[in-house]
Each structure stands twice: as C-alpha cells, then as structure tokens.
Length: 157
Image 1 (cartoon, rainbow, N blue to C red):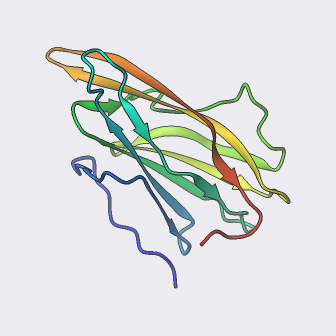
Image 2: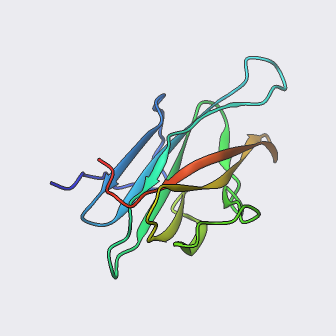
Image 3: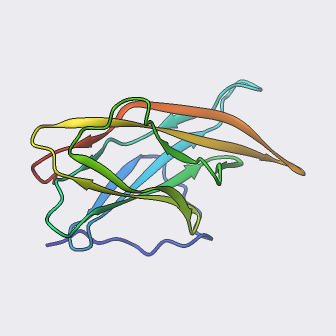
C-alpha cells in the first residue's frame, strides 16, 4: 500500500520538532522536513535537525522527486535561489543523475533524481536559510550535510 502524502501549500506553516521523511511509492515522491531552531545565544547560529533521505533505485521511466520543507521556530526561511544546493564539488555516483536541480516550488524546494546504483552510495547537499528581520533579510546559516542523501538499489520502507 503506498504511503499517503498531504497536499502542501506556500501558506502552510510547519511546526514539527521531529525531522521526517515520507515516501509516496505510487507517485515516486519523497518529502523531507528539516527542523531549524534559533540559538539560545544572542547572535549564535541556529540548530539544524535533518532526516536521512534515501532515494530508492528508479524504475524505467520513473524518477524520484524530493521535496524539502523547512520547519522553523522563529523567523527563518529558505534562500529563494539556493535554499537547497547539491554539492557538485564532490563526485556524484555515476549511476545518479540530477534531472532537475533543486528549485523553490510553492514555498518548498524540489529536485528530481534518477538513481540506478548497484551499491549504496551518497551525495551531499547544502541548506541555506535567511533570518527575516524588519525591512531586511540576512543570511544566517549554511548547514552542510556530509553525506545526507543515500542512494540505494533496494526499496526503503
């Protein structure tokens, strides 16, 4: 039975305190929630809690869409241009193609992957957020995952 997935909209406010990953096997979609909490120290860096994302092997003609949602206490938001950025400085596994680089869609970041790995492997990505303040936005943190997205041959679940 395929996992269910709720409809997400730009106006949706997420306040969960547990990072999650859900799989919609019928539509080949993966939804990940990343938690950001402000620092208890004035001017300190926020804390990120992120789930491990595992992209199963693609079946012919089907690719996986990964959607990241930012759940933030305080006034944080994705950088609209580079909220999620795949690390291309580290070689991607040969059997993994990024068909669509991460882009902002309805307040969430989405990327499309084709995975044909034979052995478990991984790739890195960055999360860039802004702290909103009166009349201005300031980049407050870049969190580097090393590694965070696992690519696997067998289905996860």
